[in-house]
Image (cartoon, rainbow, N blue to C red; front, side, top):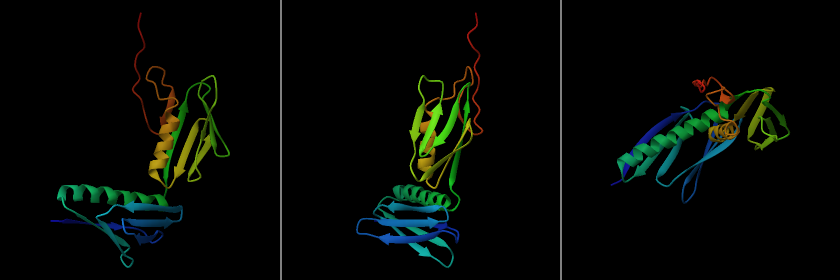
Length: 184
């Protein structure tokens, strides 16, 4: 016996949504002022668009009600995330803390000086925008939350914050608990 789960997802008038049905799955294409993105729904899902109320009606037909509830929650969150991405975008701020730590953007490369014997060049895609308003701040912007946070984590992995001297690459608003050094 198939279980039917239903979710309503609201969106704004500045987002255009089109639904493409194929044999295997459903493709949702979202277009807004910041760009265009898409999401593939697996077999067992159906989507209907209510243009008058600016709503999407997401339905899940799966044998297990537990699995259906989990999956419909996951995919409704992903759709909401994509709607927010094309309408407002996502942003991550990184702060470089340390003597001589510097960042600048050249073409599509982020150039970092982090106290190593060599400089670090990190390339980034066209769908991500990286800005350095000053030498110790890096702002990563984009319409896909996964790509923005992944790039921020990649940059941060070069110098994780360390608790003894308080140096490293920090997220905006992040504080690290300082540890006391060795005593004689």
